[in-house]
Amino acid sequence: MVAPIAPVPTISKISPNQVPGIALPGRVNLGLSGTNFTNESKVLVTWTANGGGSATIAGANTTYISATQINVSVATDITPDKWSVKVVNPDGGVSNAIAFSV
Image (tube, rainbow, N blue to C red; front, side, top):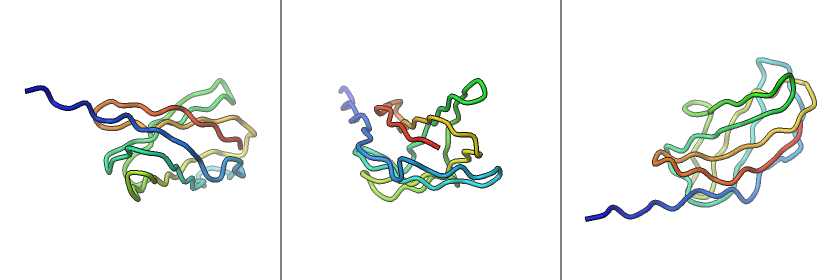
């Protein structure tokens, strides 16, 4: 028997999409709306400032609300920058990217 393919997560909205920079170790709270999130979903963030980078956020810094809502706490620092987020499900399904600015 072949296991059914799990639906890929999608992000339709990030709130807010313009966030204030907060000096480290402060964090900014973001709400992600979409579909097919799980209670084990992780959030991948990328940024471009200072050579760019990425980080996977999970555990205490993510809150699963429902299959359509995840809240995430991100350390952005104060440098103006363009960021993006993706949701990654435990089965490897990866959402579209959605951008926000600091």
